[in-house]
Amino acid sequence: MERGKETGAGNFILLGFTDDPDLQSLLFGLLLSMYLVTVLGNLLIILATISDSHLHMPMYFFLSNLSLADIGFTSTTISNALRNIQMQSRVITFAGCISQIYFFIVFGCQDNLLLTVMAYDHFVAICHPLNYMAFMNPRLCLIMTLGSWLISVLGALPETMTILRQSFCSNMVIPHFFCDLTQVLKLTCSDTLINNIVMHSVKIVLGVFPLTGILLSYSQTFSSILRISSDRGKYKAFSTCRSHLLVVSLFYGTSLGVYFSSVATSSSRISLMASVMYTMVTPMLNPFIYSLRNRDITVTLGIVLSKMVPLRESMDACLI
Image (cartoon, rainbow, N blue to C red; front, side):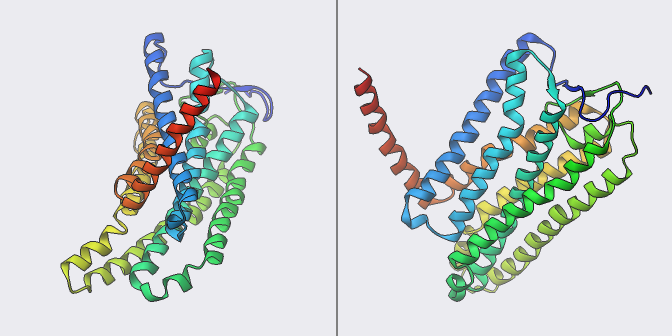
């Protein structure tokens, strides 16, 4: 294959979803709607946890950070896809592609680590309720949250930096709607052994280890729940972590779907659909899962929204 432009020069071409102009218009409306619902839903969760003092608890503090990570995770991919459809352009610069890969990994790792921290929070709440506030004090919660952000920011660097040493062939076409790391590596003319070693090492450290922590936490949690004598007590204990369990199932289910679809089949269409579930649907559903199954958040969201309506009416009156 002909040696192409060196790293740092040239642009990538994102094939996106479809070439049909009519379908692109429909797709733009669908993606924009999903993006707005995702951003608005997660912003409301953040506002609710900030505005209500009753929600100034470790679980809601972690939830607000998860919502922030979900906004960044979705914005990294959907915003560029929307721009490409609107501008009728599929071009993304090398710098833009590298930046997208980096922030995609950052927010994906942050979701992963926060879900692990939240699993530990449920473990302490159910297995050590009397010592909960001692274990989950504000200082420790802040350290765990800042630590997860720091690990995500630093952990995304090795995978991203190794791409800078690569040179690319003349074919710079990515069969995806965003710069997926595995797809980009397929376009290189250089040896990708080091890249693959780094990529799989990071996946083990920032993917497998947190998942193992979640499984261990819930094994202890379920063991404690089964030891509760009353059925009502068991139901109450389980209800405190069912929303988190559902979000964990969605996150890891879709991420494993992306991984196995890329390994088991060469069809870019199947891999693309799996990525849509992972990057768009899961962050969009998370606010609904937590708000609909949590009375405290539902009530607070109602109060926040009721305050926003008079504010909007007063602003309209001033404009008139």
